[in-house]
Amino acid sequence: MAEPLLVVESVYAGYVTDLDILQGINFQLFPQELVAVIGPNGAGKSTLGKTIAGLLSPRQGKITFQGQNITQLRPNQIVQRGIAYVPQIANVFRSLTIDENLEMGAFLRSQNIKKLKEKIFTAFPKLAERRKQRAGTLSGGERQMLAMGRAMMIDPQVMILDEPSAALSPRLVNDIFAKIKEINALGTAIILIEQNARTALGLSDRGYVLDTGKDKLSGPGQVLLNDPQVGELYLGGGKLS
Ligand SMILES: Nc1ncnc2c1ncn2[C@@H]1O[C@H](COP(=O)(O)OP(=O)(O)OP(=O)(O)O)[C@@H](O)[C@H]1O
Image (cartoon, protein in one colour):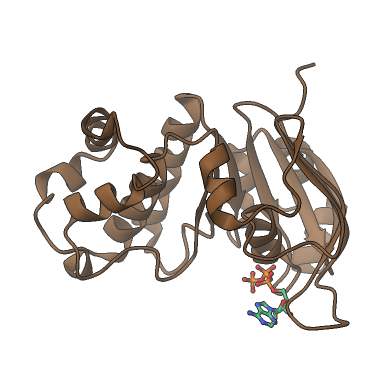
């Protein structure tokens, strides 16, 4: 089996002194994998994403990317290494056009901007049609696509998507998930943080179920879907599918 791209080992992290939200969490991501992170409200899913992205500093434990210790790197250094984080809210510059938003995403690159932009417009034709339109005028689904497109401007090895389906209509949720699959198929490894547990596990290679800041369960998406323990954590018993 290939070496993991990203390894989170026994990480503790939190927002306020003496309160650990992540409590010794372990997580691995292999090259080109699509991994879902699911779990009840407040389990620490977003906190895991933010900690990998460097927005929170681990108090204990280690994070390794491509064999190098990135535990104490700043967010900009982590982006530079090739890990892009797409937050759940406020993930685009509303007063800038689509074109400008994409160019801001490429601030760490001086070349290939045009090529990357074309690649993103091929993936998201709706954005291409409206490239001169301000992001604030886009629908929720379009804004989510723009946020993903902007993250793609650094040509990342890993994309962390924090609840991309939040607040979208069911039809748009399907569109977003289809795009996530496409981006993953082009070679980007993806960490998909989701409330929408069934769908996320259904399209992922593997999944992690978080509970009170720990990796309670992990395994292939389909195996977790059929695991009665997973159903128990969410639905008070029974299978997820
Ligand atoms: N900026 C913050 N400051 C203080 N506490 C926070 C902050 N952000 C999150 N928390 C707390 O950390 C805990 C975990 O939150 P987190 O957002 O990681 O959970 P989650 O699993 O993503 O939940 P949800 O599915 O509801 O988004 C919660 O108790 C939350 O109140």
